Image 1 (tube, rainbow, N blue to C red):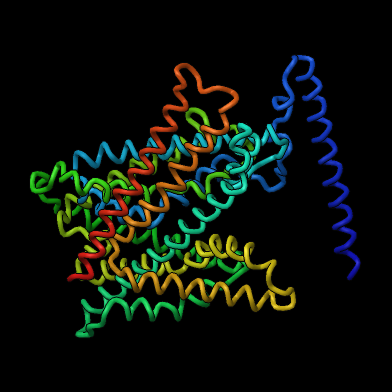
Image 2: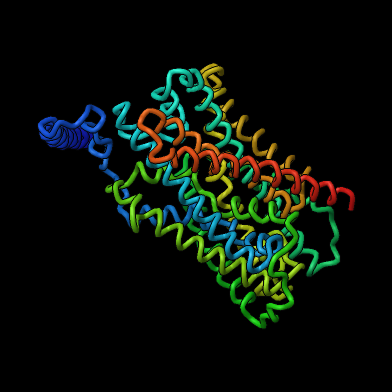
Length: 465
C-alpha cells in the first residue's frame, strides 16, 4: 500500500509529459504556419499558448475574482465620497474615475501581453511588466529597469500594507460604537485599536493560505449579509434630495477622488487573474471580462454612494455602517462587517509580508528561517496597529491611502509602462497615445498632491479637536 502513491505520481507525470508534448507540437505547427505568412519573431510567440492551463480559471471564475477584488469594504466608504463631491458632481465623477481605472487596467494587461511576446515568457507580473518595458525599451531608459521593478514592488507593498491599516481603524471604530451604544463604557479609540493586536497577530501570521479558506468563506457571508441590511436601512425613509449638496466646494473634490480611487482600485490582483485564465484573450475586448466586472462595480458603487449620502447627508461617516441606528439588527451588521474584515486580514496581509520576506529572507540563516519569518510578520502586524493608533480617524485616512498608494499604482505606473512599451512602435496619429499617457500621469500626480494635502489637513484638524 505504501508504494501506491509513487505509482500514481509516475503515471500522472507521464500523462502530464504527454499532454505537454501534444501542446508543444500544436505550437510548433502554428509557428510554422505563421512563418509561411511572413510574421515577425515576436508575433510568432503567443504567450497564451505556453501557459500551464491545468488548473486554469474559466471566464466566469475570473469575473467573480475581479468582482471580489474590487467589491470590498471600499463600497462602504462611497457615501463619504459623495459627501465630499455632492450628488450631481459625484455621479459623473464616479463614472469618470471608473472609466479611467478600467482603461489603466486595459493598458497594463495589453502591455504585459505584448512584452511577454517580446521576451518569450508565458506571463509577467506587475513588477516584471514594468522591468521588461524598460529593458526592451529605448536604450537611454534601460538603466531604469531595475528601479522600475523596485518602485512597483514598493508601491504594491505600501498599497496593501496601509490598506490593512485602514481596516484596523474600521474594525476598532465599529466595536467602539456598538459597545458605547449599549453600555456606559467609554474608552479612547486608540485602546480599542491596541486591543485588536490580540486577534490580529494569530490571524496575520498564518502562512499557509488554505488554512485561511474557512475565514474567507465566513467573511464573504458576513459582508454580503451586512451590505444587504445596510442597503435596507439606507433605502427606508429617504429624505428629500434637495436637502443635500449637488456640487460641493472645489476644495473637497480631492477627497472625493481619493476615496473613490481607494474604493475602486484592484489593479494589484488583475494580472494574476488574467494569467490564470483558461481563455485569457477574453479578458480584454468588448464586452470582455474586465469591462463587465468594472461596469458592475461602477453601478453598485454609484448607487450605494448616492443613496447613502441622500440618507445621512453631512453626518455620513467614513463607513456607512457607522451611520446605522442602534437597533439590534443594525448593531449586528456592524459587528459582522467588522468580523468579515478581521477574518480577511490575514489574506490581505500575505501580499506585503511575502514582498518583505523576499527581501530579508535570503539574508537570514536557513536554520532560523521559520523563526525569522513569523517574527517579521508579527512585527509588521504591530506596525499596522501603531500607524492606526497614530491616525484613528477613518475618512481622511482612507483618502490619504487612496491619494498616495492608488494614484501611483493604479494610474501613474500603467501610464509610464505604456509610454515606454510603445516607444519604438509609435504612438499613433499625432502621438495620441503618448498625449493620453502624459495626461493620466499628470492626473495621478494631481490626485497624489492635492488628495494628500487635504487629507493631512483633515488629520491635523482631528488632532486639534
